[in-house]
Amino acid sequence: MPNIPLHIAVIGSGAIGGTVAAWLAQSPAHRVTLCVRTPLNDLQVDTPGGRITARPQVLTDPAQATPVDWVLTTTKTYDTAGAARWIDALAGPATRVAVLQNGVEHRDRFPAVSADRLVPVIVDIPAERDAPGRIRQRRTGTLTVADDAAGRAFAALFAATPITTVLTDDFATAAWAKLAINCAGAVNALTLLPAGIAQDPAVAGVMRALVAECLAVGRAEGANLPDTLPDDVVAGTVAGPADGINSIHADRAAGRPTEADARNGVIARLGARHGIATPLNAMAAALLATRAP
Image 1 (tube, one colour):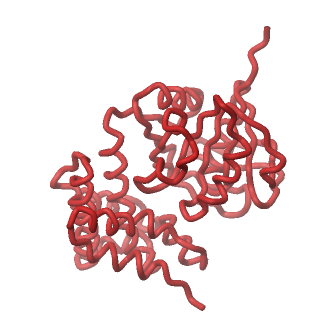
Image 2: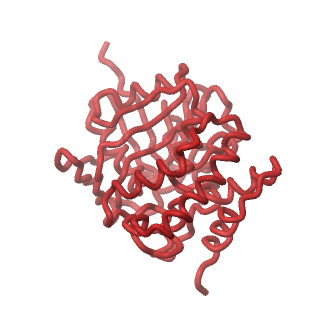
């Protein structure tokens, strides 16, 4: 009997959703469906190794969906309710759901999905969407998951792609280490200046202070984080492209909602639970939640 392709539904066609959908669609072992608000004809991703294209099936309404083998939700955290409607339609009894989102609350956002079928994923794929279906992938990047049965099954989906899938036995630490990078990105969103601003010593000091709060709260939540984390985050930012624009910066510049709650607000909320002061992350979350009238 011929092998039946795995049916993978990707919710969201932004930089991450479009990139992973296009790569997954390169394999004949996969049948990819893209779940979006606005239809598009194809995906074109300019990767470090050249352009790849894909023409996945496109759905624009959860009512059109039927159960699949895998659901990968790549929407921004503020659109969790919309993603949940898609998951309700796409998930059957054996469907696994991978959550490719920022923050440390992957499981909390989708309580209707049983824990054994939900796969939290830490995404480090620098990519930008230039137009619908048109994406620039700056670096091949990584996807990090727990080293368990579900995580290994997720990693197998990307075995034929250049994207590295990292298996970790300490997902909490990995998630908080990524959050440390993300929380510092609030500086760029607030100033609307690219990564090169971290070369300013005063600005670098603010970034270190944001990460120091994250470090304290992460440790209280059980993450094993090094004392050097604030310096490491700043050094990593300075070493990257000076014109780099992170996603929260791009969202604020475009007048869209931001993921400030998932990137800074969560540090303040969990810090309050542990009695840890987090004034800078609380301020960043409050300011980034505002939008011009």
